[in-house]
Length: 87
Image 1 (cartoon, rainbow, N blue to C red):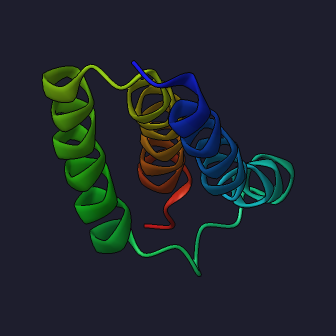
Image 2 (tube, rainbow, N blue to C red):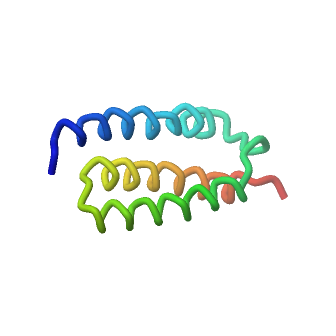
């Protein structure tokens, strides 16, 4: 494993994963899920599962870490969307 290349991957992983945090924090504070697309997050979650599988197949720490953490954050947003959805 080339750690110089993995370092670039880790920086990219942190930046793209952290992008979900503001939406999660806002949703937890306001309980407003009106502007959240369930379809988009379900597709995103499926994509993350495939990226995670790819990360394991090529043994990339950065890809595995990013997609595990992102998957958890996206899954939390999906759960919040379902729980806070207005009838």
